[in-house]
Length: 408
Image (tube, rainbow, N blue to C red; front, side, top):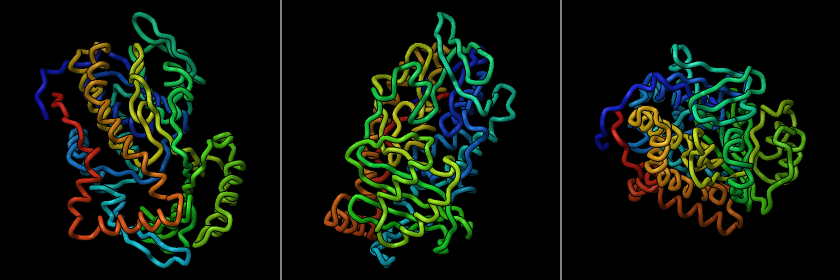
């Protein structure tokens, strides 16, 4: 890390952070320790538990987690995943992937990570969480941003941070409609919890046929619970309401009907879901914005540069929180200077993570049988002992491609 001048207190600033998944609580922690007042608004009624596992790789991620004071706790609550297996239609193993391939240096369920940061900030006198609400409108003035909410009374903040994910409402209000920034990558992903009928223990099994993948995983050691995942190719974006459970169930049933392995049993469990909140279903896509800030509004996490999967979005989110809060402190709260410095320091790093994400769909669900065999051969070679060190460096390249400044 390179040395920087002395930072200044942000006690005079009151920031609104929209979103309490990963980027929001990470930024709240970084800002609060520098004295800023932070209000975090989250549309969900409470923190979302569980979710897909997320991982951290290399010295950059580790440095930021240590700076936040959560590295040890992340390790305590890590998944401890073992090797993960690619199987054929009969469940016969084709290839074992080492735990570091999917899980990096340390892997943790998204909900557990959010809980760690929430627990570190929820009782601080300068941090307030508001659940069950969301931003309705933004109006910037020379001295702040007037914000209206769906449920709460209007308030004025010095700065507003969009940390509300790939489909960010804050970004839509400040930057324009999502259609101008979302790049569809030709695949969809879905996931939900179901009984652990295979008796998996901190491992996962993946089955692919051309353009489709089904996986079953157990990440927390609970013998009763597993997570099912679907990935499938679709040349065109599908017409569906993200809150319409029946439509999503129908799409998945039609796309995966007749597939081998455990697919029919997984589809039976899918049909039993009763709430859209039990199912994650989204396009594999990326967000590309021309800039990360407009006036007094700035984006962190998936709202600004996200990818649905495979782009180390969680690691990028905590790094972004570190850089943005540090630059605000160095600039004494001058958002023009701080936002420009945040963009200069972080943009290339975010782009590098996005490049990696573009391979997620084709890796999990190659379009042809030949490409499935080629994938298996490639990763069998890379995971073999002689190439293990090279493989580790390869997977860490994007995650470490930034020189962190030393923010006091």
